[in-house]
View 1: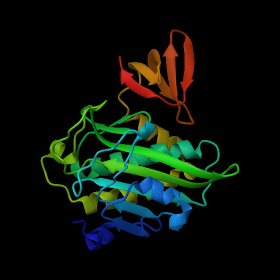
View 2 (view 1 turned 180 degrees about the horizontal axis):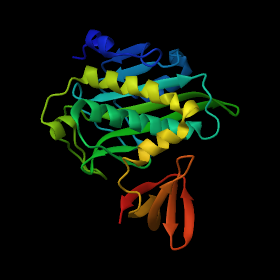
View 3 (view 1 turned 90 degrees about the horizontal axis):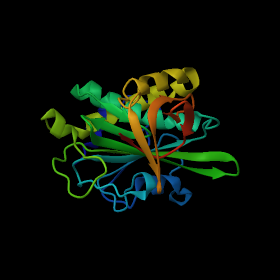
Length: 257
């Protein structure tokens, strides 16, 4: 069982997670926070569910998570400036917050894989899915879905990247309440960097991206592109170098080789 009182003691935020909803089972935490009809409208609302019947990652890939062992939650951001590159930087803030929380608490070496995977020793420990809803040209809601494999020790199914968990990598049972509070504490802190020092977000993210400088393939649909992972630009897009040509990659699945 998730100890709400212990979580609240560890939470040190002003906005993020102060409206906290705990659920045993939902279809998708992202879907609920995006849907106005549920009336969860407060900026910083966090919805944690022990089980998601329709949990998903990028490209509607199913996210499997054993009930009661992991963290599957979403954060709602409203009434903020999401113009320009800000919306892309939210993605980097989210992965950095999860990475830094795991590093701080468990001294594990984290790798970040563009655009939104969190790895330990090449195995996936967490993933992020950001979705938004708009009214006209204005983005009204941004929802960040985060799934972290915490205490699950075995995984069934076929995966593009081998999964792991913090428990598997640290050989200890993890207090989910402490981990979630740490993620949210860091998220709120570095979310401010979007306005104050956006370049620091990309610098810290790139410091954890082992793929930069490597030969990679980028797959999108039935198209595959090859080249060198040259850099991440100021907006957070991947720069692929093929010969003398530099190409900006907006989305795709990235693999070494």
